[in-house]
Image (cartoon, rainbow, N blue to C red; front, side):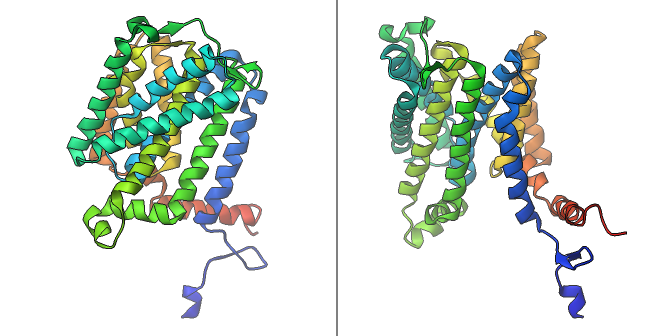
Length: 345
């Protein structure tokens, strides 16, 4: 009877097989290391240029994971944070001449302030009303920028340089590595928050705000913290985007950016970082290909269909599929074979 309850063994020495929960972090570290050396292995300007944009998209999408997946805040205001960061980067780095090593930190501070302001304004509402309020917040910021002559008005700003550590950040490899560093930092912060008292409070708030408040959790304060972190990194993504595009105009606040990031988060799985990253890379590649072949007008239509199909047939997104019992069991079996060097004979 006890044999049926003991953990699975592998190999002739009877070692325990690694569980999926132990194997997945190892895979994650391997993927992160491979991503870091990718520009060295593939020395192609166009490829590295596209990869840098993928990293920027991943950062922005994970801020939505933090707000919606972890804190349970239905936000449509990422474009406001992103656009503010883009303009702040031009002002601080491109025009004031502050190097990006400090400038991007200042951009993050600006983004955190915008995130906190958005939270203070919108957290007085809930659910759909909160989402609409965050969307309206973005429209307000966009119109303020569009009518500000000192920010270039509708035409925006061009003719600036974004520097970083003495180099120019529009160089694809440097942009990729800097963006990857911020992406890894955001992942570490989210993972740390999940395991902390703050993370437990956020998840309790997400599941039942009333129950969370009844046990003394200040739900508003924790949600404001999530808004601040999300705002900081969304602004950094916007700052990196200015180096990628070398132009910034009111379109960075556009609804298409909001819908694109929302599609990535929903299809990837609001509560799954790996799922969101995979989908962010895939949809960025799809969008780039559509623009190359002159079919960019269909991109948002496809994104809309993906959102509808995902909500209908895969509510937990790709991340939910990746963490399903069958997939986890398959991962464990792969770990068994890996540990035994291909299995026993």
